[in-house]
Amino acid sequence: MFLRLLSIIGIFTLFSCASAIPDVINQPIQQPVLLSQVQQDIQSYQGTSIRWGGIIAKVENKANETWIEIVAKNLDFKARPEEDDATSGRFIIKINEFVDPLIYEQKREVTVYGQISGVIEGKIGEHAYQFPVVEVLGHHLWPIRKPKSQRDLFIPVSYWGPMYYYPYIH
Image 1 (cartoon, rainbow, N blue to C red):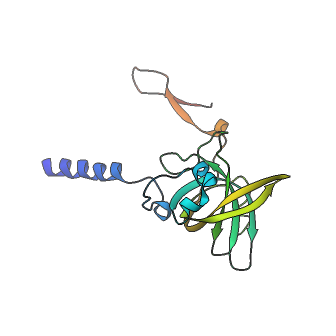
Image 2: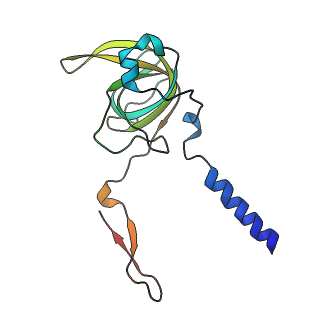
Image 3: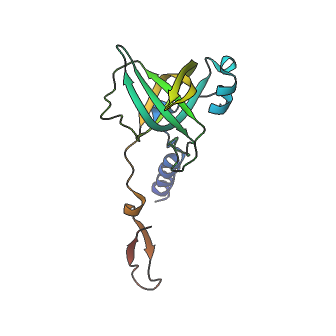
């Protein structure tokens, strides 16, 4: 009985220590680098490994690669872009393969692991902008989130007898 209990505790301990970050982007990074730091001094950060994420603004397929413009977002503990209106700017990722723009469509969330390779002059509307460029070594396209109004949160109604729950929609 004791061994069975000990093995169950061991299994739960292993699962609780498991990383929630997808393996393809869970690579070592020397120190976190902010997009704003790179925009101020691109030369100092070339070749630096980063893990950034955000929302897709534009997809452009070239002959042998795909360029994706990303609106940068802070990442949560799973390395998924946070759901807020804050952004530190935009950057471009280069993926060395074709990605379908109907799958990698505008407003989808993506997280990338890669190295800073330079800067590209471009425009956002009529505004001139310098886009830091990331050579992608790994990327993760996140599933589409349900709207907040459709997420279920179960709250107990009674503390006596069997617990009854109802979906609380926020």
